[in-house]
Image (cartoon, rainbow, N blue to C red; front, side, top):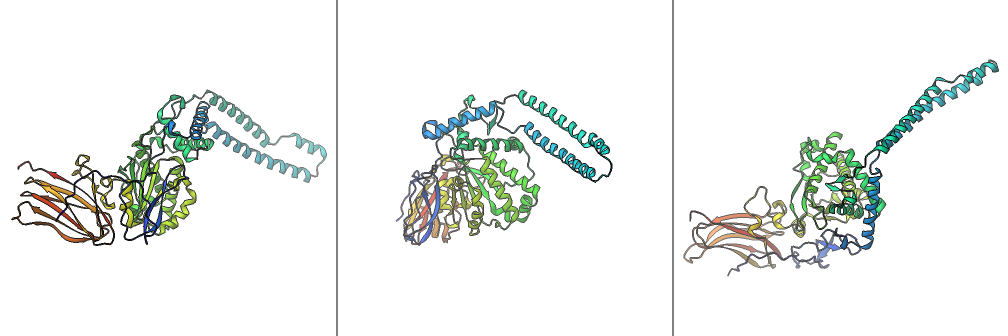
Length: 525
């Protein structure tokens, strides 16, 4: 007897803490109460074998912190107001950037020191000559009256420096105030009243634990770095190296954050590795390419109160080169540092999947360079838990097939109008079926199905409504291993009936099945 499973909207549960008595290691999301962020971190705990996989759910503490003034705490509002005041003063006082005059002054001081040094040496030689001479006192006095040539040069140089300093001061006084200064398309001058200004400033404040002076200094350094590195023109820049197979944006998560994938396994290819990290110039190109991708990701954000203002990053470490590769280690360390220092609070979560054992040693080396707030956003996942963990943050239809989801490249078979993915739980040692009705003759049935963790028996068949007709085997029953990708199949019926998908769970744990289907009518019938 078969059981018909109707397509219903998936209900998303809150985070469930896994019971501690299980012997198998599983990923658990634990909320840290004392963290201002309300972020989550992944720990490994023990849980019972007979307690199957958890509900596909999203993290309750995953949402971004509010940028509405009414939602901020008193000390946060006070810090924001103070930062806006200091920022406006810095803009009006033209002290946001390092002045060219200041740089010239530093060079002049060095130049003066260089001039003074040979003069001092000349005086030393003069003194020695004076003491060693056997001539009379009158000759010595004459020599004292004659100024060394170096002294005349020194006086000329000092006068020139003074004139240049005066010119620099005049230039500084006449410099216009730039009230149109912006970052990521958001005006920074508080008096302009842009609703995005608070959102951007809160990012810097949160990155510095609401210490106003530290946040302002961080903002100044970021603006200086962007200016010196020509970041504002980076979106239009043609960068020689193409690393789109390693880093790319693809879809959104459950909260609407754009998802950025970092696929380090592609650098196992020696040619690509050399192209990205072969020498110092190529490593610079790699950094610019990575910053360009970050800027493209920010273009997808809504930097207004209530808008999606950060990304979700998924870093796949499967087959990635080990940290023993010096070029990769150097480039990645620099990239992480610069991204952390100049793009504060732009990553909501950083999920590391297919994590090898060497990662923990590498993480220990990298950890001292990361802020605690940054580290609190890391989620580390072993290969066996990749799909289960990603489903907590990303919907199945947005997860690429290689990670257990239904998203395929250049696939237009399914759309949001076709309905959401449905779920079915199969108890240990039991069998369930999913029925896809095919009432109209000549229709084409299309379906996607995956089992989280697989390890089940699976078959597909068409059962005609007419009992006198024969059942058609679409796919023979077979064992599906844990590393199977989601299955997709189609069937065109020549008589009324139904497609029956049978899943037999022969393991000792519950299994979660995700599936979707659609019927395409044939115009000729």
